[in-house]
Image (tube, rainbow, N blue to C red; front, side, top):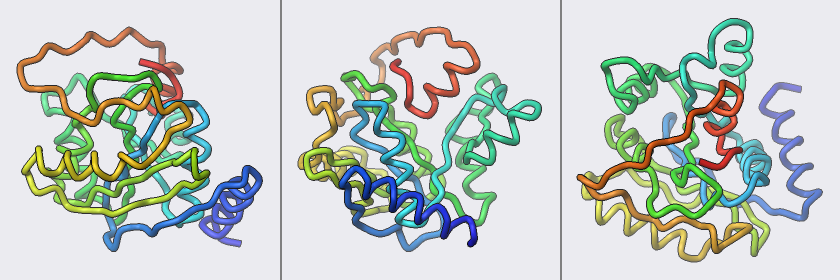
Amino acid sequence: MDRQRLRYWVGKAYMGFFGWEVEGQVPDAPRYVVIAAPHTTNWDLPFMLGTAYVLGFDPSWIGKHTLFKGVKGHFYRWLGGIPVDRSAKKDQVQQIVEHIQSVDRIALAIAPEGSRSKQRYWKSGFYHIALGAQVPIALGYLDYQRKCGGLGPSFVPSGDLDADVARIRDFYAGIAGKYPENFSNIAFRPEGEGKERPPRRGRVSAFLHGLGWLKA
């Protein structure tokens, strides 16, 4: 049994065990960005992976380049990790855009909330990555009320930020996370508004945070 078929049955068994359904389909494109939302609990990760395996795509994720040194680097890459050098002169978005354009296939999963706790804004990186690479954004979701995970519509960002964010907001209006009160407001931080300084993290916690397992 090949890897994709094995993952399909693992995902099918996991989702079925918890009484969940999977719906939707992957975009008709070899490269795309997947929004992973709502993100309000650690349970989101296994349900997201189960959904991805059933639908037939391997989600990639972004991590600090220092995580990918040595033997563990091979393991993280096998898990779908993409190293990004935050100290480089080239900005992170451009690094990821160039990576996407250099590969034949990729489904880059990003949780724009960045934390399980409620945030004032979504992080806009996923949007600028998709815009720069000119690839679709797929609206991935976990609806705990209906016990259903899937991929909704996908679209290539137009550059009209307000219109595209409104489109995303309208879709997620009917989706309930495990803790709906913690679902962050779907809006980007206005230009000029100061950013909160993130807490310092060790290597392991930085990796887990990158996957969305730890709070900001």
